Amino acid sequence: MKVTLAMKPGARSFIPIEAESIVPKNFLGGTDLPVWRGNRELRLDEVFSVSVEGDADRTEDVEVVLSGETFRLKRVGEYMDGGRITILGGIGMHCGNFMSGGTIEVHGNADGWLGREMAGGTIICRGDAADYCAAGYRGGREGMKGGTVEVFGRVGDFLAENIAGGTVTVHGDAGDMPGAEMRGGTLVIHGDCRRPAANMKGGSCSVYGTAQAMLPTFRKIGTVQHEGRTLIRFAGDIANRGKGNLFVKGYEYLD
Image (tube, rainbow, N blue to C red):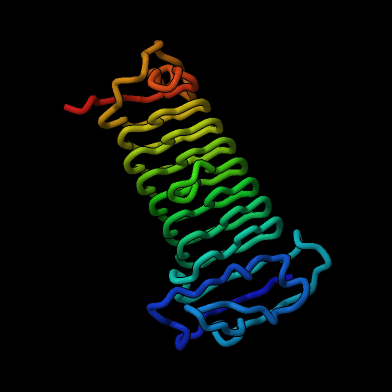
């Protein structure tokens, strides 16, 4: 079953639309679903032109396609456990919150907290992602626990903060403090970043570009070969018992 949701031009607003109801399993029961603009509840068809092709008995057989001015939609795919969401443009904050299964593909840019505290499934972002991608919420200590996040553009600050499992891959640059407080999982950054893996407790962080403002609390072990690259290996942050591994192509200490 393919459900297409095209945002109506009249639905544009400076107030974001809370759309946590947009998950594949909800469409097994029809399209009579609510979304919220501020404190006002709206029907799905007040915001979107809705069309449905085919039918399905299982969540895995449902695809939801979003198009139009979707960057102000928040919480799409929250608690998603199967199926597929395809977003033809950008998407707002908290896409894929607490996701445990299925696939979300964003063809544009994603706002903050993409894949927040996700436990499984796959998120693909073809554009850039803002701060706190695959991280926990502010003040919390729960980050990504499982699944896969892949961003083809650049990512903002605090990428994969408190990550405990799963794999995060960024093909562009990342901002400040990627992998901060990481406890497990795998983080790969193909570009440059700043102050990676601060206070890491476990897991593996690889930077194929330059680790700028490298923290002095990492102990250099030697070099390793990885996928044709020579990377410098450091033991995890000795400010926190030196657990985990940080691999970088090059690094610069803060002057």
